[in-house]
Image (cartoon, rainbow, N blue to C red; front, side, top):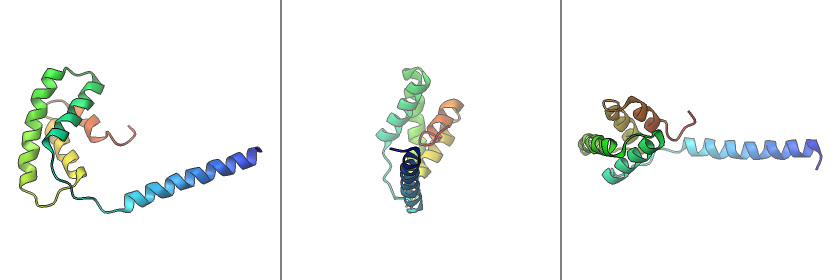
Length: 109
């Protein structure tokens, strides 16, 4: 394969990925049901990545989940982004680094 052909193939793949990402970002946010267990497990996973002590994180992950659950019960429509945003705000009280990592876990930091 010539250099030009390789460059064209790479360009086509990059455009395809870009188009798929753009299509996905244009979709309206999906309505989700709040899952306390899922929220706690996501916080615990991110804490393990940061090397935080599991016992301490478990305590405040439950507290954060309680606060987010109370918040979610007051809303008729919530999205995954809403839950992430509120949970990271509540998590800031206990661990600012963990809150930042949790909020940006699906993006390149």
